[in-house]
Image (cartoon, rainbow, N blue to C red; front, side):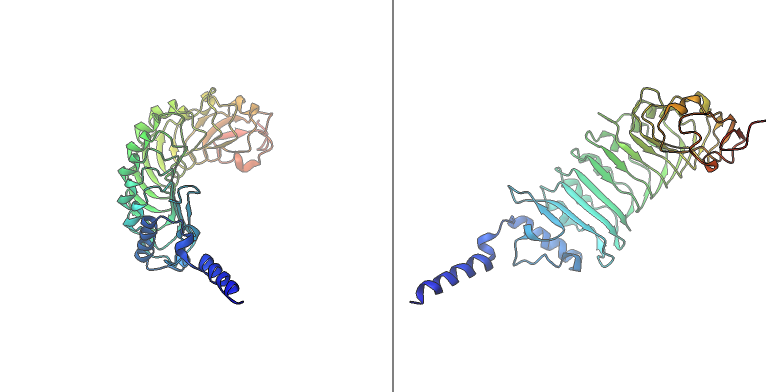
Length: 329
């Protein structure tokens, strides 16, 4: 009489506790993942990576729902994870997302084996201790839509080949130690221009005139050592939402600039910009504006959002006047 219950008990235990019956993880991917864990000295962040369990159930990764191949690897916010990016990362051929963020003890250079990840759409390596150059091989990853290498210790010049990425929606190289000039090729992105973030580096020289050909939604060149004319970034027929060129050494006549109707954020503070504030800015729905610490003169136009900003938006110019500053004499 006990045979049936015993058989059911065996069947249930086999179903729920045998990894071989419910394993979805591809054996190649599982082997590579365990090599990655070992290369990173078995960090606590990867404690769920148990070889006895299905890797598609592990934390810090995602598998495709149909093929069960690993398509996303994401590790973040762990100062106990130490070492370099393991070369084995390049052996996950179906990877679409590689995200290593807020890992202050991740060091070394950007791993060359990443060049093998031809399906990669998002490469996000940020807030780490990575150093060395922005590698040329990144331009081989033609499916990239999002490239974020911000908040690292990267140095050297910006590879002009990055402009050959055909599907790029956003490029973040800000908060590094990059030097040299902005590549001329950044005015020749195929398709639509990506959001471009190059702030907080040591870039120098003039902006390539070719950037005027691009319709950036957002462009941030702030806190560099750039000089010359930046007015080509503006344009009446563009659809730009935000422009930040603050804390550089730009020198041009603001009164001659024409602004897109879509512009919501304009920051040009701490430059050598001259002329007056154009009347055209009164027709924009600006959420933020800062023209302080320049060489502007004349009366602040009345209307639109111009008087909704406080004096700090306008102060430390050569001879600006009118609300919210002192009245013109």
